Length: 300
Image 1 (spheres, one colour):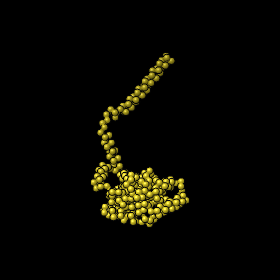
Image 2 (tube, one colour; image 1 turned 90 degrees about the vertical axis):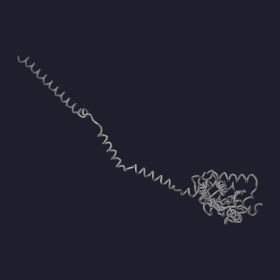
Image 3 (cartoon, helix red, strand yellow; image 1 turned 180 degrees about the vertical axis):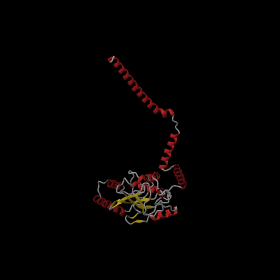
Image 4 (cartoon, helix red, strand yellow; image 1 turned 120 degrees about the horizontal axis):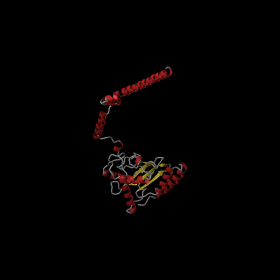
């Protein structure tokens, strides 16, 4: 089925209005504005698998439409949502919100992909809005496993929601069933779906358990045991200092000092006094001998 001509006319009007509004509303030198304008230009034409464009009055809020992946319970479904981009995009990731009931993602809630705003630490500035769209398509057939914003409906419920999605209408964009190009069996569509699958393998779906992860009882007991052993081996600093000092004194008391070493300073001192007395005695004797000699010479 060919695309509705009225939608094409409406799309062209939106593009012209968007271009005029954006140039007058935003600083065209901003890296985020430049990047988003470039991506809007690259994604201006709908494809068989996805389509996304910013709102006419807000460059940082986009509405997107993706087709359910083939050979899955989402096949035939048309799913619509919002992408909220931060002011410092692409340095920080966007937030992704699904609006169409689908049985895989919660509605009106930011889903937790490593490519979304929940995990800025894993975001890569080289990723783009197109990358986010492919990630959504790739993750739809995967298991939720209790992740934030995920649902685990049965395949029958998801197939029913896929059929109902074709008649769903966005309050802002209108009907969704004629936005995307008809899916063909050509190589382009197959390549896009293969790219989405490969991207889903590279980008993890972060679970809520990972954000609120607590230590297991076994690990807690191990930590407690380790802490108790540390506490048993540790003691106050003052007690430790006292014990070291006492130990040093005990060791010092065990050192045997030779008596000769203890009396050596007194011996040296007594020898010095003896030498001095001997010198004085020699001096006195010499003076006396000199006096006798002088008396004999002058008083004969």
